[in-house]
Structure formats: structure tokens, C-alpha cells
Image (tube, rainbow, N blue to C red; front, side, top):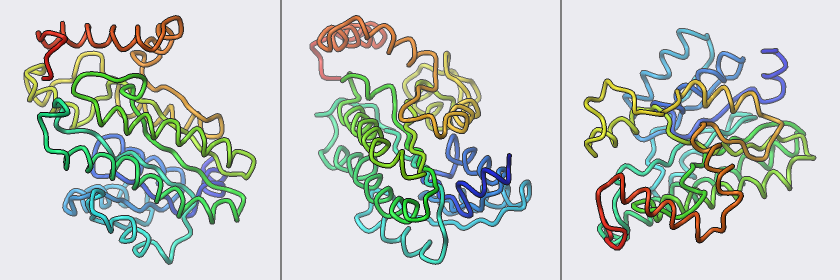
Length: 278
């Protein structure tokens, strides 16, 4: 199993957003399957810790690229750092929104940063690394989306829009590449227990402490399990019961009905009127 996985998706994998949560766990699971891994994220000290743990537990080689994915030249920095590697797996799992604020309550630069990181960077990385995969006739690409992509919602205007782009982009990429030997998969995440989610929920007053698990959240390990179990079965898979149930419910509703339902539900949870912007 390990040898077959490494032959299909190796010898190197890249994980963007690898400093914690799903990204760091995904990188370790790839290493356990026989791949060497490139870890990409902003914070060098966290990347160093993750890389050291992966080397210690799996024996895999690691390389770190500390770069802010909202920088205009971030993609080129990653390309330059991996120019000597044969990359057979690309995982894009960066892209959470740490603010959870109304669109007009933040500067437009905050929205632009989300678009750059979640859309343009994903496009650039997929375009650069997919081409040699197609030439070799093997490889894999996993792009993370979100339940926020299903419909527009309060405080998720730009984030939801970028994740909808990611979902449809990945589905289109699957259509074009699925006969080439390259497996493309889009993951639609629901509530997932990560450090970023705990921080957000704690700041919103919905979590007593950062040591608690948000109610209804699935583990990062289960997300990685779903991804690895569904490689080659794309284009899209949901990773949490909340997203699966939502998709089933929404099948019988118009988009307008779905948006109004989400608007009402979020207003009740937040204690705000549906006409308010925040």
C-alpha cells in the first residue's frame, strides 16, 4: 500500500498551510505513506517544529518554505524553493478567515487578501505543478473548500465566495485531468477542530477556553482520512456530517430559500436582526 502510494503520488508532496491543523496532519500522513514533504506556511518556527516531528516519526525528508500566501510573489518563492524536486502531490489547505466580520466592517484589503490566498494562489500552484504531473501520467491534487461555499452567509461574504471558486475550479480541473492519471479532489469541510477554529470560537465567546473542542466539530484526522480514502474518486467530497446534511436538505430548496434560511439561522445564533450588517 505504502509503496504503491509513493509510486503514484511521490516522490515529493507539497502542503500549503502546513503549520498546524489539517495541514500539518496531512503532511505527516503523506510522509507515513512514503513521500517526502515540502511544508509551506507563514511562521518558520512552527514549520520547523512540524518538520522535525515528521522526520522523527516517519524518516521522510522535509523542506520548509516560510512565505505569506497573500504576498504577490509568494507563488514564485515556492516555485524557486522546489525547482529541483519532482512533485507528485499538491495539497492546498490554507485559506481560513480569521476575522469573521461583515464585509463593510473591514478594509477592502482584507477581502483582497482572501481572494489572493484562496483563489489566485491556488490557481497558480495548480497550474505550475499539474503540468509535469500530466506529462508523467501520475500525481494528485487536493484542494480544500468549505461549507461556506454552498451559499452566501453573514460575515462570510468574501470567504464563502473564494471557497465557492475553489470548489468549482477543482471540479473543472478534475474534468480536464481525470483521464490523464492525475487524481484531483475537492474537500468541502464543515466544522473541523483546528487551532484556528478554536481561536475564532473563543474570541466569539462560543468556547470557554482554547482547550475545549467546538461543539459538532469533526477531527482533523477524520478530514485527512476522507481525503486519502477518496483520492481517485473525485471530484468533490464533504468531510463533515453538518455539510452532508446541509447538502441533502438544500437539494429540495431554491437558492433564494437556502440563503434566507442561513440568514435567519445565523441571526438567531448571533442575536442580531437580519437587516444588520454585523
